[in-house]
Image (tube, rainbow over all chains, first blue to last red; front, side):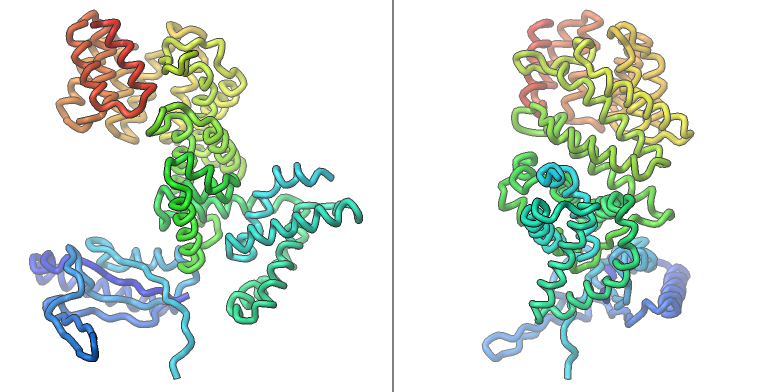
Length: 119
Length: 407
């Protein structure tokens, strides 16, 4: 079963983290990614640019409307994701718990809906 | 063969196994129902099988496979069930012994999975492991039937879609997950023993279900002191059931209860289990409370109570599981062991800490101590304060009666 792990944390707090500390967190992410790649759980994963760069798009009545900012203003913001393969929710939860941001932000675990392949 | 009796006693066992085999709560329930129907039709004619439960499980499973085969669109589901054919063929001989119990343990860990909301865990456990109807559960928790039905549908959907496993967690996470299971059982009991709303009168059927569940968990995990501790605690609390209320439905305090009406058998069994939990060397939240309840249970008269021991046990509980409620009970035990002044001093410290604002048990406890010290005017004020935040009618009547005594 595929799961999407959505990583949320408070971007504003991030500004107060020292450069040395940021480096450590980055290292921890590299190590985590390598470990789930090796254990064959990893399918994909990326970090996102801050919500200040986000644009929200709606298409209505044939017109595309783009507005500045994220879809929802929340206390913690989506900052990255992993797509993993896990045998069940317990395994997915265990992996999510090892994501460095789980220690200060939170991780939402969402099962992927099975759909027929495209093309 | 008494099929009615089999239905009553073994349905939940068979259902647990089927849920694991089919991975679908609703399909399992429906197919088991059909298997029972087939049993009613064929057993009287052909004779009952040697292992009726195994027969029911395998009949229901074959009915499920047939159903899925017919529904050609459900390819994925069929593959999933079919892929278990080999596994089932391999484990089926074990059905003669006692494999179903393990399935109920697996299922209780599924129903009490932390990825489900706590109130859903309770409802799902009562539905799946105790066999209560949706309406019964809805009534017990004072929510409309359709709301409860919806909650259960969503929970079963999440288990299926997010793949919450049917499994007993590994040793590394067993203790943590067992906590969740025991908490659900304790919640079920408390909702029966001291309902949070309404008339406040107990619903004994919920207490009995909780005791059954606690027995099951303890039987399946005999080495876990907290499983023994919880069963002990529930039995000891239940032993006082009939003595807790007087003829007019008013709450009777432990001190004033007619001890001849306590259930001696439950006290004996609970005390044995509590002792075992304590002797394990790692007694926990339930084990210590059970030990306290056992001391009460063994005192023939209220004045025989070994309050010194109880105060020590509450101090131990407070250290491992600090909470305002435990602190309150500790203060009350100290008051009994060392005099009301000492207890009152602890209560006043609690009040200053401010953790118990709006908690009616604090002024009620203070009022009782003030009454014992003969400080009637202060006791009157405290009883009035307690009445402002009291939760249910039975407790309200108790406080009002005390207020009349000192007023």
